[in-house]
Image (cartoon, rainbow, N blue to C red):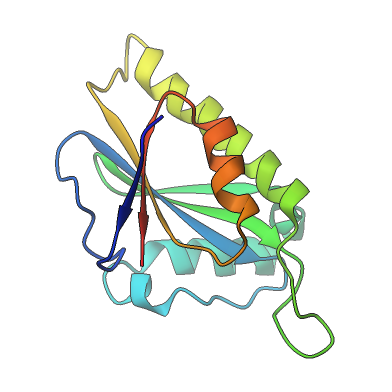
Length: 152
């Protein structure tokens, strides 16, 4: 894995070729925070809201929600925060749940790369920088063979 740090916004992925997978850390409480993504694509927020409203089991910590917004461009909601950040919950990120999410996404990415029917020539991951330093270690463990671009 090569970890590339990009100073620009995640809304403009640095790579335009191949299959691009954007990873978004989301909470399990049904409150969508990625409004900057919703300005470009409605589907990820709509899917997240429908899953919360109608299939709460899919919003449990460790769940992932793949949403292909274009043929070779997916946004994956990672349910890895337990509630919202506030005075009573200063650090909602659940690193064990994030690790499960990353491992599930890695499995899906390898499926896309290895499948004879859906084989894609290349695949890159894109994610916003997180203040928690453990996130990059988890990225390196799960995506050891995929290029990851971290923005912000």
